[in-house]
Amino acid sequence: MKHVQINLQSHFGGGEVYTTFFCRALSQLGVATTLLVHPRAGFWDRLGLPADTERIAVASVADLPRHIPSGPLWLLSHGPLSAALRHPSPRRLRSAIAHMPVQGRNPAAFAGYDRIYTVSCWVRDGLLSAGLPAWDTPLLGVAGLGARATQGAADIRRSSRYDWDRRKVRDRLLGALEPMAEALRSHPAFVRRSGLTLGIVSRLTPIKQFPQLFAQLAPVLARHPQVNLEIFGSGGYASVRDLDRALATLPPGQARFWGQQGDVGSIYRQIDYLLSGLPEKEALGLNVIEAQACGTPVIAVDAPPFTETVQDGSTGFLYRDPRQDAGADFARLLDELLAGRPRPQPELAQAHLARFSFEAFVERLRPIVADARAYTSRE
Image (cartoon, rainbow, N blue to C red; front, side, top):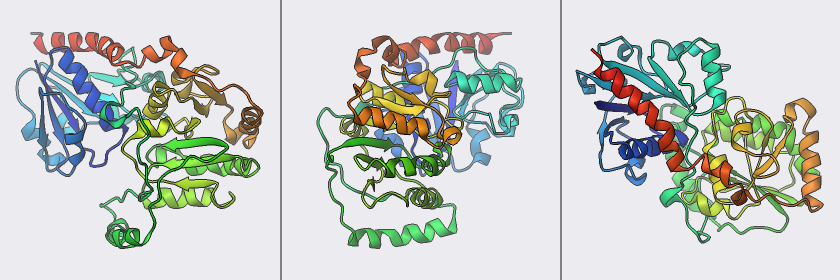
């Protein structure tokens, strides 16, 4: 059975980490992969793809069909395929991994598939409600940080908080000017401060909804000067601008930006809690899983998908959506933590963590591979 995956993202994020461990798991199950990627996506060399994954750069979506072999084929895309590749074909299994929930989005983007694999129950339930063929068992994710994690504390220095979108004229211009501005700025090393440290370790993308989150939480944080907010990640111009505005009511220095960092494992071990974004646009949250694997508990809104990835009281704390109570429950939690409420120890929740191991992921993928082989070999 030939297997082709498509991931044309030019920016590195959780979907690219997911693609990597998906290819590794397929390799364990004896399935080699041809991976079609964006020509400017240079990060694949650093992610540890298995030896039996062949990577091919594709100039544009229009060029995809000529890279798709004829005959029996398991075709899988990370996100929706172009309509041209969704036409029925004998012994071709048209499938996708849904990395985003369809709730609040147009589910028609996933029409015309034979199989859709989901990363969480939250994503699966949205697809099923739309009448789409979601695989019954969510794949979840893998907490393996690989080469991105270290046991010691890395030298983390402030870097740019912008991830320029080269498709936009404004971003191209600002991105061209930024190196000159960065040369004049200081790039201090991260030093943990006294007090309670909450960390954001994430790309600053719209799906995380950080500006909307801090529109509610910033007034609460301002009343708790013992709480430090450390932000490790970068985003587009508008995302950073809107987050700046939401944090403007904080005392100077309470929130610090550190930009995108490579060694996230070291970061997790230097914060008290990972703080997640808002839930409903989030599909799973690999950073939530990774933090717990590093022994760092998570503070997240009490809603899917975080109710799937965080055990309240054992691997972190869940609190009421601050849009419902103006952050009152979050304030209550901070008061309890500052008063000495014990910090959860995620490493003790072995059964919970085991769900996000590479071995468990391989086993969830095993029946999918068997189904794909049966589908592509049928007469």
